[in-house]
Length: 439
Ligand SMILES: [Zn+2]
Image (cartoon, rainbow, N blue to C red; front, top):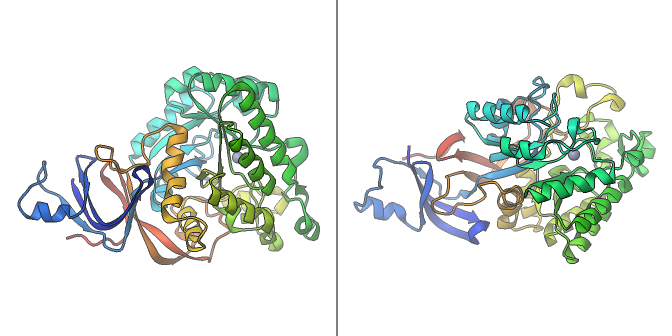
């Protein structure tokens, strides 16, 4: 099937493009033309190469490169009651994502070729989004011995991380950075000093004291951000800091970038949308690691996004079953189901004037693709037609029971948001759509 997407506003940071109205012609799975008024030249008698096409009238809509989520937990294999590769992919499409990278903390852990190949095969069978496995940095993600990096790269892993936990041993982390860097692979670091976080439940501070919950201090994150940046500098390698959440960590990354150290950083929507005060009602849907921080941290994360210190917005989609969350706060699992709310929460930053729309799309598409060195993040002619159509005016209410994800664990239930993906195309095929006029 070929498509002519007519009259939308094209926002493609990879080509420094923000223009309206413009047309896109999708032929044989690829973007074959990107121009003004293609529909006129075609209706004037110049046929598209392969004949028939479907016309989609996208006046008033925004067309962007397909969104890329570099931090998702798909839970399969091992925790299929929380999420499967299929349900996670469906949630991604509804959220406007065409590609995602999935973290290795499955059961078994993705620290070997068999698991990486299983995930890739399963994703291809589903035929929904592009799934890129992130493999464990150490065997079993236990922090003791390096995983078989070469073998995992050959099998299709795109990065290494023990996400869910840190690599506590600095000597091991040094080897991870050196070995991964030497074969051109990205290392993603979950920055948490376990001796400082010490089994805490929420951000350490005034709110935790009032609620009587044990705290995870910001310094547990900050010292590891410093350590990994210094290690990256020492090894002359690069490092990507996952889910940055504190004011100090933002400042540390900003300073490191000024000094020319090769560090990139991501944050997740909950870190610029909520504070630790959310936990007043002990709603376990707000229990996440790193924890929701203070208003001051939220301000700093926004400033980091604005000035480019934070390169990427990732969902850190961490779906859980009811039995994981509907328990006492201390026993509840950490994590937020984020794929279906990330874009709309990101668009709030545009509304607040913190990011322009092209900057938001850059952080949710082009930059994560660049960091992971995967295809996507562009609408350039000749590339695969992975794209997202966004209705930036569409008002909607977050209803977890309507999530495609099996994880209904969201602290945003009932929020009135504006902006939604209304059509998601992967490889030139429409994989998700809400009402879009066809003619
Ligand atoms: Zn993590």
